[in-house]
Image (cartoon, rainbow, N blue to C red; front, side):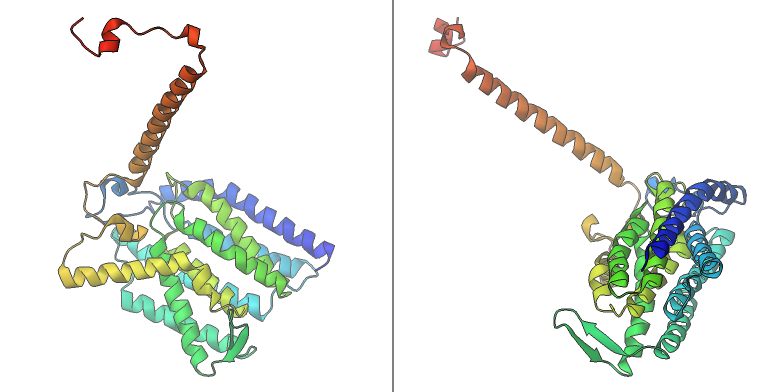
Length: 357
């Protein structure tokens, strides 16, 4: 990668970030006007019910902006950025985003949180996974690199099942993670950074550039999604990000590392499985908060205090303990540091340790 291509890529990332910062306020206002707002579940926490009406489908911004910037630079510059690998990533990004958009649209129109039926959504995700496998299989091998052993194993026909699980599981895992302000987008930025490094190490600058554009778009989105969130990504954004990271791991041949890099998303899925199994067996929702995924914590019974209140209280207690300890240490130090002549002699009553005087 020469200096001119590097400058193009840096400029593209800065343009993407600037567009996100400039367009997000207008998108938030527009979604407010057309009443495309979040609808919280009736059994959710009171603190989460305050989010009713907050604009959703914010994922449209960080899908369209980096995609259009990438395509325009590919068409208007001498660099051929669009190849089979970047094409698969873009199709996965936009394709799964489209599934999420349909789901969000149904939720907004019906004013409930049902959306697409789970079977229909899974069927659409499965079809896309098969399409991406067939596209990728036409130009790549079915080998999988094992990091610890540093060996590549050819899975043959079993590679199809690996790709199928990657796309369907990762898209749903990222979707489960989208439950707390800033959590999903922040975790995705962290997860994409290692893949950005892998792309440049493998001399796949086009893939690295596309990942960089998405990271910059997410950073711009996070400005408006941090607590208190002014907009949510919705299934439009979460499914798109899940499809993106699965496609990136596939084209970079880092399928196994996807589990480690996306450990938070894997933990979310395991948490959901544990909670659903526990509920089906006991009909109780008494799991501790630590075992609850952020996406399910908002479904707990009303009356619990919000996480921010607990953090605020804990911060005040830590400050109070620090002040008390500091005061005790300061007094002890001052008492030892005072000259013996300045110390007040104890009275007769103090020596006898009595209160009769």
